[in-house]
Length: 338
Image (tube, rainbow, N blue to C red; front, side, top):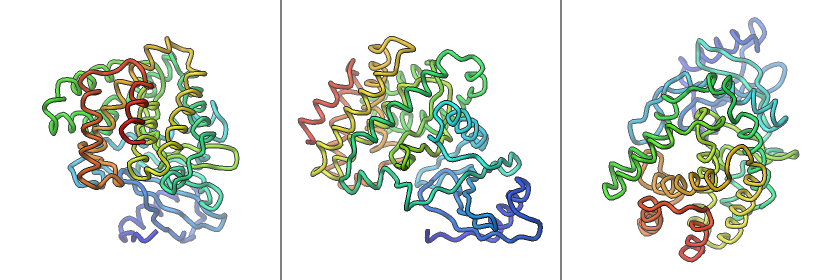
């Protein structure tokens, strides 16, 4: 909370709610902006029937660097959530309405007293390996159910959005800052762009996962793309490593979560050779680590220059010469950070 909506935003959101037929004629909903996102405007809406949440895509993301992304990503997010809901019931909030004109959609509002943000648990030093295991199982289930599906591939041919939201701000931007890694990072951009295996969420971060009574609930699928499922695995595992820089006292718990997610994921990942899938994840993970220091979206809790240098120094050798296994990265991280 603590944000304010401009009058134009209030009018636009109310018009969008009416187009979605979620408010009664003459009803004036109460709009409360929510914090947490940089790529969209997210608002809690109080109406006569209760509460819901509206999300509207922004063309320019709210970060220090110039970062723009196609507004069409809003439709891809809704499509991902609808498909994920069928594949793993309860793993996303219910979609209540869509408004293509405003690039907005409405979904169920999940009470924060019941649905905790996983990131908040981790930053408090509470790392439940069963949550990580469930995240890995859900990811692998969605990846497996969509692997090789040509219809899903056509629906999520969102290469331009994925480049704008992930490959350019993460890897291309990091390459510009680290010329010694530039060739390896640009090669990774090419490999990832060409790898088409399954439906990818693209932002599997603990801040986008709620811990609910029935298990994890995934949010923010704006980066949804038919591509390399290894990206989702590497993205989430990166966050579990980085949390130990912020909370070194809980580093071993975070590593248990790392192990639990990896084991649960690969226990279900049978649509391709496990060693090839893991090798791509092991190639992506150190590049994402570096990107969270030198890309356009640096992680906000690694702020000390010494810590940033430590992460950068750890990641670079693995970016230049990628390992074949995630254990190689995990074990080295244990030596240096845990």
